[in-house]
Length: 213
Image (cartoon, rainbow, N blue to C red):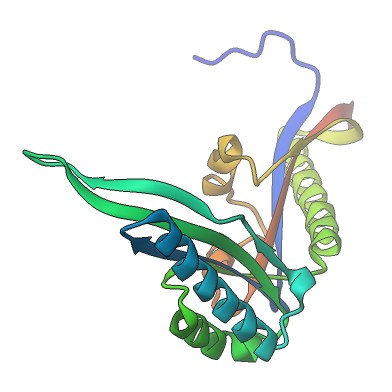
């Protein structure tokens, strides 16, 4: 049987989410070329990079919104019964931000046509995420307080002043267990799968004093 060795008050967990329409997209992709000599690999990759740059500008993506790594070169081998030389692989990684959500599909089509054959991710987001996170945190505190008041009422006492606040970072993988065990009023985790929306999540642990009725 679980024992409370040093009882002092009420501890409750509260979480909340705020849903918003995305207003930006981040696209991660690579230009990769495999040739038989380093010079050929560099030349092929450089030409593809220039083509990708032209495509981005045609879609009104500013240079400041584009992050690109330097060209990287490595030797590729096929391993089996006998090691076989495949060539020299040259690549450059890109991360691009765009606010033209209606043009994302065509941008991806044109990037692949320009030579960016490896699309690593397309992530939709909102620029006002700090403001949305603040809203979610206020709602999480409210949820935790309501839960504490419910427990106190059921136990025949009153929830008192807040003595401790512990932020739960929902982006930390170690705290993913909290999201999967969140059953409280006003928060539906199915919202995470709502198409066309970005969900900002926040959670908190509250410690409240107990006042006798």
